[in-house]
Image (tube, rainbow, N blue to C red):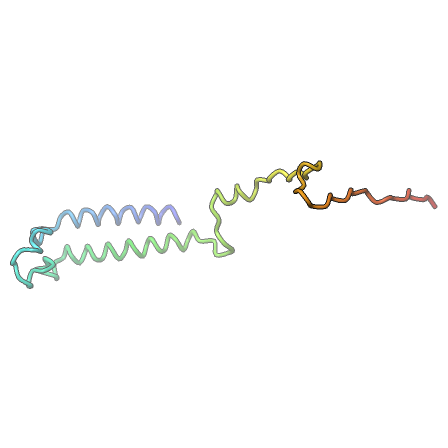
Length: 127
């Protein structure tokens, strides 16, 4: 379904390009906007009911609808979407930080850390 939708989008893009290129230019471009041509041809529209213009609008709207439809087909709908880089960052494990040892790492005037000892365990008794 997704592949058919992508092929349809490409077809609409191709047809839209053909229709736009087939239209007659309706003005002199940007240079005519600053001339004394008058307000009647301000944006260059002379005949809005033209078939090519209707086809252009139809293909443009169809392209937007198909693009949104392809997004709806691919959306998972559950949970946040993460990029490949975010997934790799979550999978990598950082090395555990090493505990400082020796009096050289303690600041001057600070009390020395108390030595830690493991708790004594009693051997398991058999019954």
